[in-house]
Amino acid sequence: MAPPDHGFSARLAGLAEAASKEAHACRAADAAGFDWPPHRAADPRPPYELQPGTGRRGPEDLWRRFDEAVRQLNTAATGQNMLDVARTYDELAAVAAALAEAVGQEDGAGARRPRARAPRSA
Image 1: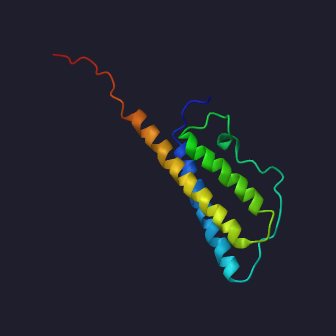
Image 2: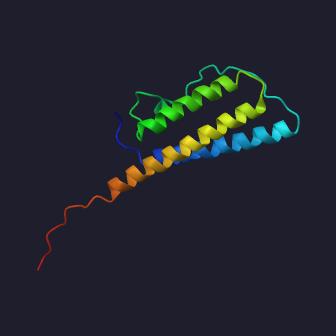
């Protein structure tokens, strides 16, 4: 397991923001009459640090939700319903934001641990 990376929560927050923007774009495209172009990604897995078994930090229940959101997004992407894709991006955004907050709190708690004080000189 890799040591804690204080940039991890920021990357999760970035993912949440990007997924939210994708959901918004899908809704705008749907309103303009577009269908989702069905496709399958060459590798539907998220980046390595977001995959199960890689030492990802944060609450397991949120990671289960994250894994399910990724699965649902991959499924929706094979169809043509733009609103289904938007809804799955919304869920991915919500769970990534919750993970970013939880990991950020873990990182902050580690930073706030009391340190041993150096002896004062007289």
